[in-house]
Length: 82
Image 1 (cartoon, rainbow, N blue to C red):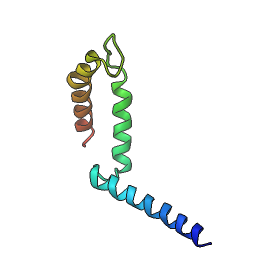
Image 2 (cartoon, one colour):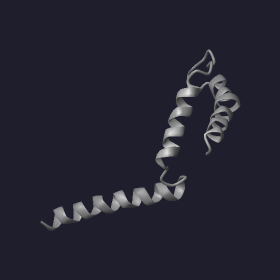
Image 3 (cartoon, rainbow, N blue to C red):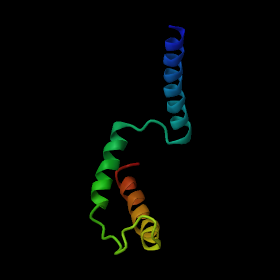
Image 4 (cartoon, helix red, strand yellow):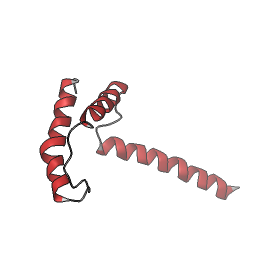
């Protein structure tokens, strides 16, 4: 019985610790409005033309992400008020 109690406490505290770490490292718990804006921007940016080599580790894709996708994503979120 004690073992089950200790396992339950460990799992509960692990979940709390993960939430605290995510809050500390990230922008915090995002609001519903920010999640909605992020989803809308993601859908909008899916239409951007992609490089021929779509492999995520390729140099073309990395340059496209840095020069095209990330600036467009930031601009979209600014237009949405974030």
